[in-house]
Length: 342
Ligand SMILES: NC(=O)c1ccc[n+]([C@@H]2O[C@H](COP(=O)([O-])OP(=O)(O)OC[C@H]3O[C@@H](n4cnc5c(N)ncnc54)[C@H](O)[C@@H]3O)[C@@H](O)[C@H]2O)c1
Ligand SMILES: [Zn+2]
Figure (cartoon, rainbow, N blue to C red):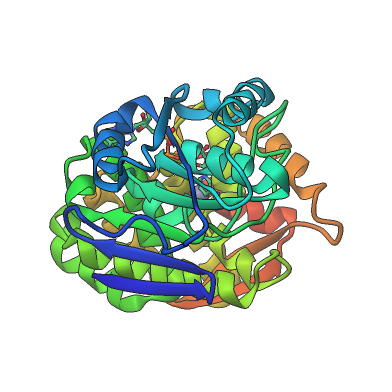
């Protein structure tokens, strides 16, 4: 089992098969509340059985699937449930499932009684390599993650055997963020995908991708600088995601193609063709669906308003070497052209 430390109080455990230890030792704990997604209900039952004792039977709540749980309404109902259970300051909340439920459980735990312990079991690949790592939690209002807090879980558990059972579309979602981690921080992970494609050893993929994110986050918890490296592929990708209504992983893949073209123009990046082949070999799209380029430009301009000094993009000098650069409209056009949105 691999242990990756985020801080003294937060660790990520990556292994294969139960029992991976779930609960950090804590003498004063008297109750555990488990929040799980429908898609992760089997995993949740296993956890409840593994950690339950006569003195402390965990309470399980299956929450709405996907982002429909990330609402104030679902939060309100969950707080009432925690009140009924009498979950106290020394108790623990466990979130089981993909990124939607870990974002939700983290928010609930961070706000219940001004903060109780939270543990995640990440059961999607995207959740494992991205959402469960880094301490961002959130609910959606009119936009995504408009309400939230930064708070690390005390433990994240990732069972690679479980991830291997995921359907192909959920694996692809995670591959997009995992290979992004390689592009920005681990050339060996890029080589691993280059050699083995979708057959790449998933345990190595997860360990390496989590290490990249953990290291960036440890250096920059609140997103002032280096954390922006994680946005590689997300500036233009996010515009395409909103305009085309495609999945986040697909959009990030397309966004990385665009970002590689801008990187080539601005930083002399030589790896654009290799990156394109790699993304295709993972079954990820590399050109935008047919959408109005002006709509994508508008959506990118809207994101830009949040960054006072102009639009900054994470660009590559080489695999593993990132620069955060202000980009011009002309740079954006280079990126848009590379994904068929001239
Ligand atoms: N906090 C962060 O830093 C961060 C980073 C990236 C994404 N996110 C958030 O993560 C969410 C997306 O995460 P996601 O892609 O994991 O989606 P998700 O949480 O919506 O899960 C996708 C689907 O997988 C199902 N599922 C879960 N475990 C399964 C299993 N073992 N087998 C089969 N199906 C299973 C779920 O029921 C769901 O239908 C979004 O809300 C996004 O905002 C957060
Ligand atoms: Zn992403």
